[in-house]
Length: 463
Image 1 (cartoon, rainbow, N blue to C red):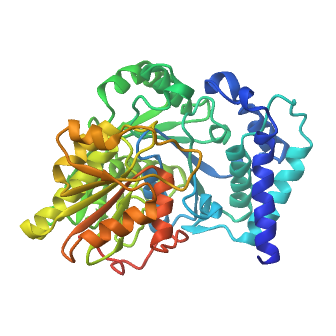
Image 2: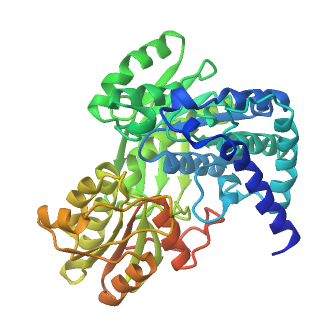
Image 3: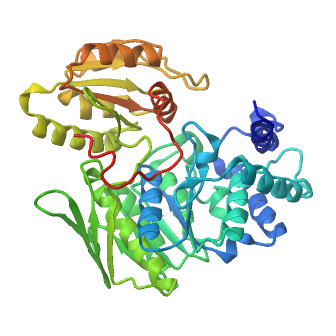
């Protein structure tokens, strides 16, 4: 290991040290009871409030936080904005979390800026039974780096919540709300309503606008009073299905968005077509950022064919086509199903679909199987290399009860090799599941997770 790589490893170890020193029993429970995101705010204040000198946008939701963040940053970059992108968790390399113009922070800058944050954090009087959230420390690093790098706008993906989330402490003028459903009930719940309330904490006193993707009816009902109060304070709301509309051209190569005061013409390939709702919300967010930065914002025209949504309907091989996605519930699996149906329509009857699923105990296995079972020729369940995840359910029997034959191979590499061995050149292999499995699959194919851009058309559509 090189000296700089050793320093990166040491910095990552320090980032988690504040969290790991607190006894486990004090870290378990609902976020509202055990988390103290105010320490991230105090840290940013101690550093001179670097977050207040960049136009920041925060992203929350249950499905699509990362894709909304990436799409918004990509649109802004193509419109000439110098943009930062903060996402979490990483898939392979920790430095994926902090990007500028689509490229990860360098090891040297990560260590240097991390040293600044470490010095400021060490001076804070954090009680022994509390901690500065690791993601808050990384967000503070991003805020400092973006300030010194002359970033005009930065997009921050929040964690599982918002109201008690460390990254939500970063001052943001805009909010993007991806679809919300009843997830993380052990941390945000116990009810679906509690989850929505937690995530609506993204509408802080600094937020001036919010862009919403299409929401499940129950979530939208719980959101209503929050949005009413937000509007009453002067906040503007852009909502897909209400004042944001999108359409596809006949060739399915362009998503066209219409919203209050703007239009967007977004060139896409097959990978991005299932994300049309996300694109509409992201286009509205980009419009508002451009407007507030004093840029031309009435007509947005961008080409996203060269954009890589890492681990999201990402094709990593041809003949057979191999596509990786992080679907873990019925809503996200619906994206995969739409993609697969489009693939099959183009391939005709000759192509079969081989499905490898990695769904630990806390994921919606039944919802995923119901969505993807009908399109699969073969289903193979697997696990991940992450020892913190648990796979105690008999998913083979669950699939059988739903009418689908399946088998199991615990080792993810063996499962992938088995699926590839059974597939012909004309088939599609879908590797779907939890983020840890996405990382395993990307490592299996040695896929780089650094830049989010290729040259337009270089990688081409996956089907």
